[in-house]
Image (tube, rainbow, N blue to C red; front, side):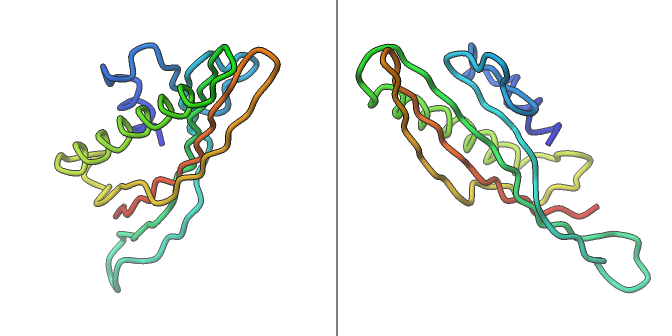
Length: 135
């Protein structure tokens, strides 16, 4: 999770987007990526070895808030940020990551929710990033 946070925080395509380790409280800002937690499994890689195979999913939330009465700009921006996340995962899958422990990382689930107040519209993408690693 730390490596994902650091990689996203350093992407030029995400300039101005808050990248948070945990929820963006009390002020989420207009654009944020929030890395909230993970769930997964570990198994021994084989007899006589100390290595373990891990498969887990990191929960990532992308929140976009826009002033006005139009929801579409918030949704479109949320998907632009999702594309940046996917690009980071693709690019890092071809380079050594986290001491060569991560083998594959990719977006596995996406859920969109839209919201509204009197003055704003919002888009919330809940994303699962599935990771296969050997530690």
